[in-house]
Amino acid sequence: MQEKKTVLLVDDDADFIDLTTTFLESKGYQVIAAYNGQEGMETARERRPDLIVLDVMMATMTEGFDISRQIKKDEKLKDIPVIMLTGLRKKERLPWTFEPDETWLPVTRFLEKPMSPVQLLKEIEKAIWKREEKEIGKDKYPVYEAIKFVVPGLEKEEAVNFVNFLLKTLERKNLLFKDWQIQRDVRRKVKIEIRIHVLSRFKKYEAKVNGLTEKIFEALEELEWKKKQSLVKNTRL
Image (tube, rainbow, N blue to C red):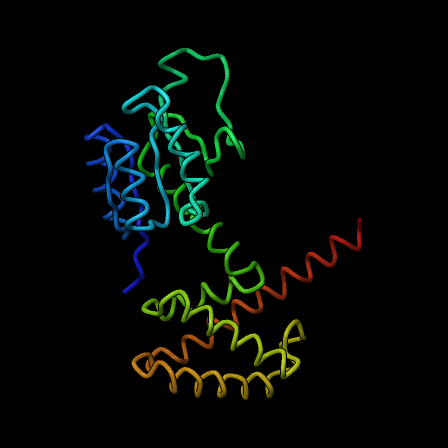
């Protein structure tokens, strides 16, 4: 079963909460709700969600702005992506748009209401993906995704440890960023080593090991291709 990401909705609009909760849960997310800024802060500290969707106008016209700054100042919450939603600009007929700012509006994205659940989902997925990529590292992330796809039951820390083991194994065999077509023999040996490692630590995933190694090498090939493209681009500059 795929690990569920948790989204905290902070909005005083019960209809929005109900509709969005139903939609996100149907897409595999765990959703928790708060109906004002203070409740939102308390829930965020208690539950540590993967992402926060925050309204602006709640108890006051600008409560969401204040809460976004509190989140940014909180050591335990500051790295959680925040998507801010509001109809303030249209309601007040403001001639400008709001943009994220490190001090005054420290959020990941600022979006105008009304917004379709499908579009909100896209923004949520993008924000969570960017946060994970930043935490794990761009070079490691394709391999991490492959492991999580084939063995979704792994905890994040466990999966990251697996990625580190794998990359060290490949570096030890000088297999990173090489021509895969002329490395088939070494590649086969690495697959065996990966298999032994998986079976020694994650026995319940034995049936998925072959699929896992294939996915991992697909991810590494994609990583190699991106690195080559980057080198070509830098050479042209």
